[in-house]
Length: 418
Image 1: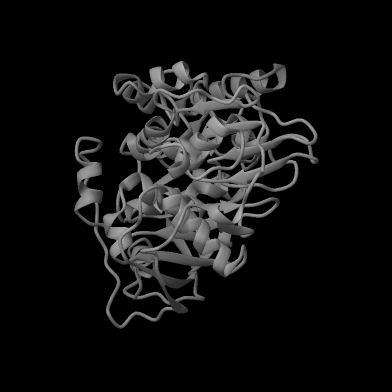
Image 2: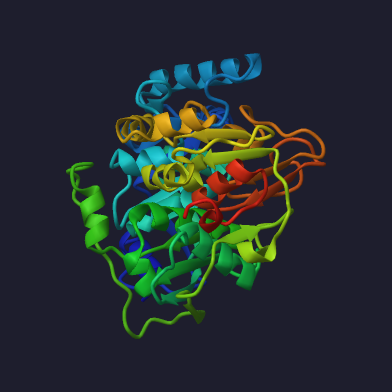
């Protein structure tokens, strides 16, 4: 069996499962946010449920419109706060909170071998920990809240093998953008993307989270990385709960095996209006930007801010650019503060905001006007995603975003860091 098949098998009680089978799968964690949880909460009560299957395995995280952007958001979050208290489920808001896909791993709420479902498509982020994690509709999430199970089809797995050592300024964001550019946005439709190879072994956990996060942009059910010493080191100190490590069998049946030599890869850019409209940074020129966003569940971790700070240190944001920096969690914010990164950003002229999804979903803190362009470390660049349908979003890694903030146009970090 593949890694994904082994995890699902362990959560069904079956000795073996194969791609294409329909299963009832037991879950270890059910998650929803302020954007989606109200639908799940309504369905939960319409089902006549008296309590969740396990109150400590259901969590609501306030992040999309947090801090409350308007009255509607305030009322919705109030409703979820009250629902959570009524049923005793985990509720994350202001105190030590953050963006759901940053928060859950850093608090040890997801571990290797887990099955996690969330009412958000980027739940697949947790695959970086060797877990099976996927997004589902809010009504399915309500069923999982009540029963502790989901009904699903076992996905096929595509193995992506990345050979070579990554060049300077090339990150996990560039690997996944390059991959999506090659296979397109439906190239892994309802499949698992298993990331392996020398470049993945050398990648930090932050980089792996980024790759798993954007697997859904290729249509995947999940993205996953096998557990290694880096995974175990990340978990240490975050959780004492026991976990299971699974590995793919040598004779596993993959849908395909794809090999990429990334030793000469340059920073990548996804041009409007699709994550697969990708090219190298050297192929773009004189594309000015009005806004830069560094953050999100894709690139809102400490290493991402380290990259950005290396570029912005002792430099200034272009006077025509709004540079918005959003830590992925309070924990990340505090670590970035202690490392001196926040001072670098503010001294450069950037705006540092609270942990929130904010501009990524066109929610708040960075909405684009008609004709404006944004270089963003977020995960989607669809029409109208960040504001006006006549604006444009360019997806890049944090170093490229920071360099672009300095010059006012899409820029290779090599140009500003000598």
